[in-house]
Length: 303
Length: 301
View (cartoon, rainbow over the protein chains, first blue to last red):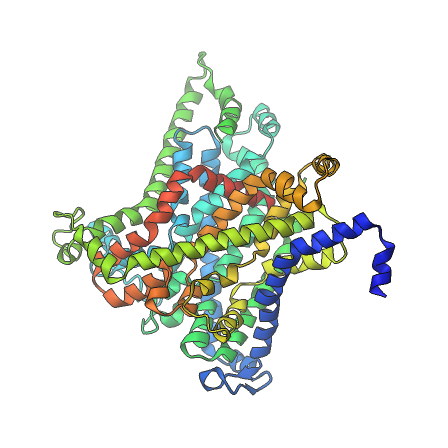
């Protein structure tokens, strides 16, 4: 029946189909094997209790989820992850926006600034965290030494449960500011000059011009930057993994969902519980994305 | 990029640049805002660089210099270059470079080529199932990657390929992100090109490879940079799948080195410098491609 249907279409059309299927084949097969089947498998595994040595899995229905909802560490990880996101997203975007607006003027050394601000993005997070951990060192660190010069007593940046998440967020902001700035700068450069001319004629000052012209017109880029920064921040792992050992007193107040997922799946070999945690992460990210898509109509300006 | 700044220059400043009388106060204010902007930008730039400077300086100190508080030592008195030899040998950095760059190269070549093939089909051809298959691509992009990790690990384990280069490359064999990105580049090419190629007797494969693909060079470069950078920075996957020391990448080796050296900060910083310098070098050589690649493709996503 299929053959009959195919026979009806012209030879050149069929030729196009065959080429198209051939061209997408590696990617689609790859996506199915590497991504689609794994999603189903992860969801499936979250319903099992992992046996010893990864064998003898026992079906336990929703028990992993029930356990998760009664696990204070999971809730703490949700709070930590959201807190980290809440710190990184606004600060990194505000700084990035300021820098981008300044660089969008004809400033001297513009491309040098751009190159420098982007450097943290190039370095591996593992290396970056190692040096920050050293900077934060409570006895010999440069940060506490600088503070001591102005009479501030030493801070336990990486071990004080109240402070550690802020220390981690500072690294997060430092790492991503340049990347967001480059994207925002590209958005700023797309704003037609006429808008600024009109606003100059109206005698608007630079600050007013920013709020009446620049900000509304850059909202599509701003939205993109916000969505990607939020999604990335919700998946924070590298920095916390490198900075906070399980024995660190600040572990409970900094462990993120992905770190908890890693520990359960690969350190404690409880892949069933790990799968349930990562399903929770998926649900939270999906929910946040849906909310953002809804809310964007209220503030994003598409011309 | 210098073009746009030249264009923007007269506009934003023309009204205030006049040298005629009565402009004095305005130009005065303009000057001060300029100073303020530079102070702000330089402070920020210093904050961006400082950790790297401190990394290099510490790597050249002795342990006692690095932990001396009274006096606090900024510059090493004797530059300890032998730190580098020692750390290099103790951690067989040569193997780490080989593993890391083999992974990056294979991911870039395979990911970019497969993505370009699929992107061309999605952008320029009509075929049954197009929307469904493209839906799969979009779906993959929306899902956090950690979801895939346990099953991917189990697959690698099942075929007994842990601690190999193939294991490192595995999750990056194909790229949904790359397919989406390159599709945007193919979509803006004019239709006449394909028609002309067809008249010249090119089949669809030849049209793709010889006519259309070279025109998306900017996109290919951008995707290549993205792919290389993400592969280089990835920590969790190599940590999980290549646990033996001689199969690690630079990133995952650092995690182990950190626990091994614990308080020997000069050696830790030496390892960090050794891990990041190659990518830094590539960045300084191709900074324009990096920054422009990210800004052009960011607008396309």
